[in-house]
Amino acid sequence: MNASPLLSGRGLSKRYSMGAERVAALRAVDVDVFPGDFLALRGPSGSGKTTLINLLGLLDRADAGTLLLAGRDTATLSENARADTRRDRFGFVFQTFNLIPVLTAAENVSYPMLLKPAPPADMHERARELLAAVGLRGKENVRPDLLSGGQRQRVAIARALANHAAVVFADEPTASLDSRTADTILDLMHQLNRERGVAFVISTHDARVVERAERIITLHDGEIVTEAAA
Amino acid sequence: MNRLTLAWRNISRNHRRSLLTGGIVAFGFASFALAGGFMAQSFEGLRNNAIRSGLGHLQFADARLFEKSEDRTLEYGIPNAGKAVDVLRRDAEVETVMPRIEFFGLVSAGAHSVPFAGLGVDPQAEAIGSEIPKGVKQGTWLTPGSHDVVIGSGLAKLLNARVGDSVTLLATTPDGTLNAIDARVSGIADIFIKELSERYLALPLPLAQELLTVPDKVSRISVLLKEPAHETEAAMRLTHELQQAGVSLAVRTWRQLALFYQQVRVLYLGIFGFMGAVLVVVVFLSAANATLMSVAERTREIGTLRALGARSRRITISFIVEGILLGFVSSAAGTLLSILITLAINAAGIEMPPPPGSAHGFVIHVQIIPLAYLLAAGAMTGTLALASFFTARRAARAPIVESLAYV
Image (cartoon, rainbow over all chains, first blue to last red):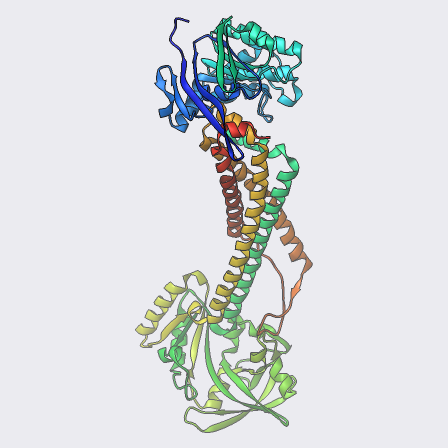
């Protein structure tokens, strides 16, 4: 990669309390995310994949190390500034979809746009366009409980792109899906990555993710074991 | 989709819990509104009793009579009272003027003699301005110029006297001598206060003046106004008119004289205030419990919204909006419930036992007081908003990763 990294983590460490013990989830990890990346984080359970995604996505703070966002140290950001950064620059896709059950598919996609101080005038149009882009034309007014698992994850992907995210963090996005649906979801993410230039950082056990990734980071016991380009 | 739509959908998400919370709030509202309506009835009854049982809206008398009791009959009486009464009656705002003589004596009927509290009155003026003539259940009220008396039902019982019986009145005149006259019982009146009923004896003013040998002298003059709200202005104006006629009298409004009314009002406000506070605490705890469950169920959702970029404050506000919306809807239901219960209670004609010091009970007529309804809606909605704020604020500030991992 010749471009400057969008996100650059150096010496990122995180410990969690488990009862009386403090367990190291990440140990001095160095990682870069570049614009348009399709990066897979793999490793066994407890290896630190989710913790790393949480730190990179500004969902959590590192105990040690620095994380630069477009060259700026994120440690100086207030909670509100971190929230605004997540809203404007990041998207999130979760294993269990995490859609808002009382909102329709289109309203779920619109929600991040509503969080902006001045929601875009074409918000509803954009939500429809994004749903069409993920193959859910005609499902705009359907609530999540009436959608299949694959359809819900598509809505979640559309929602992640609502505010023109530079990076989408996906934590085990295929773990709750059957293999055929998982394939289509991965294809969709890969397509969006290529067509829209959105970077994807995906934590996974799934070999199919790794097959599609351009870069693969393997974690074990909170440390990067290998980092390779596909 | 605005905040209200989202709030309504979240409220509708768990029908049973929202109905339960809304039901508690609606019943709390109804209790508040009904208590307010009952309290208003009580205050109005007490106020009318005070005004119509002799106080009037204004009272004119020698200033000393308002400060201390008389050692002798009519010690502080108003001389040339007729002049003052004429001046007062000429005022366009005055409905009626009731000159009165207050004195004590002994009444005898056959072998029975009982002390009485005498009231010399203008029969026609009293018929307009006092409730007592309407309380004459046996016989008739006094007629001007007659030698009749009206006695309380309690006094009639003690004397074993009936309408048409002759009685002898014995009293001390202002100069200390004893005087007696004969009279006829024209009527027996129901008096609400038992002790007063056993002592009440009214007679025409000229007869009282004859008994006390004090022509044209009265103890005090009560004035009933056409527009009670203007009592302070009327007091100033009438005092001025009297002064211009060369009569110098002190004036008091009924509020200054009705100590019993003021004390009962403070007591009622204290009791209902305490009940209201208990009610608010109960609603607060119920609402807090419901909100706590709702927040716990939506912990992951809160984490998701924050991951998407929602600030903690926005999430807290969204829960407060839910609380306020539920408060409004429940208050609307409470309004309907209160009106229905009020109509049912009033239609049932429920009679309450006599209050302390009274000989008669009263029929409940709960009033619909818009201010009580507004206060109830404000208290209930505010309580829900506060409960939502306290429970949601903490959840909205919890670490995002903990919220997302919540099971």
